[in-house]
Structure formats: C-alpha cells, structure tokens
Length: 147
Image 1 (cartoon, one colour):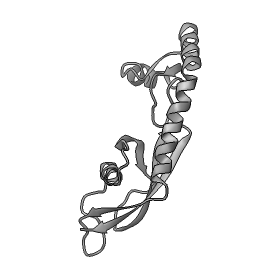
Image 2 (image 1 turned 90 degrees about the vertical axis):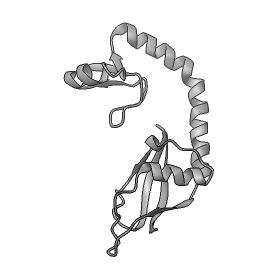
Image 3 (image 1 turned 60 degrees about the vertical axis):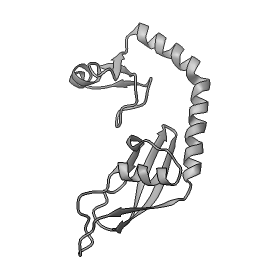
Image 4 (image 1 turned 120 degrees about the vertical axis):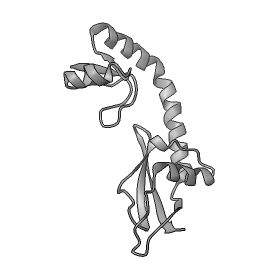
C-alpha cells in the first residue's frame, strides 16, 4: 500500500514522503491517526504542488535547525540522578531531563526530538541524538552524576 505521510513518523519517513507500508499498518494506524493519506494520482499532484511551494520555507526551517545545533555545539551536560552504591541509577534518566538541562543552558529543545544512543542505566558519560530536521542531526554528550 502506497501512502503519503502528512507528518514525520519515526522509523518510516518524513512529511510528504511517499512510502510503501503493509496494508494493515496503513489502514489501521496511519490513516485513522491522520498521519498519512492514500497515494492516489490526485493526492500525489496536490503533494507535489505543496512541496514545490514549501521549498523556500524548508530552507529557513533547516537554517533554524542548524542554528540550534550550532548553539548546542560541544556543550557537555550534567544530569543528576539518585544512584546506588554500585553506581546503578534508581529509576531512569529521561529525554525530559535532558531537555530541561538544555533549557537551563538557554537552549529550547522539544524532548520528542531527543533520543538516547544507549539508555543510561548507571552513572557515567553517555550520548544522545537530537533530530532537529531530516538533514540536521546533532550528538549531545552528557554525564549522569549522583545527587
């Protein structure tokens, strides 16, 4: 089943991409959630026109995303967590805590754009990826320390 994505879908594609999915996934999840529309002749024409008109806007969005990535640069964040004697974390470190640490440095990032390369389970140094734009990804280094 060919569909046109109306929004970015993690692991599938970005807005206005034409992708092929299994019919059950498209019919039962993507279409009812409003994340996609059928890729028929009419919808393809409409999407092509929208993409053409939005091309100059996309350059601005990409520039803004690159500016945020440059603002983060090689910043090293410190996240506090309760840690046991063996160094393991009680609970977990979340992307929300990472977003708040960035906000404390004056950088506003949506937590949904952040993902851990390796789930932090103990005190130490880790990396996360910030997906600002389909062409702008940035690696963030952070350290989990005991409270």
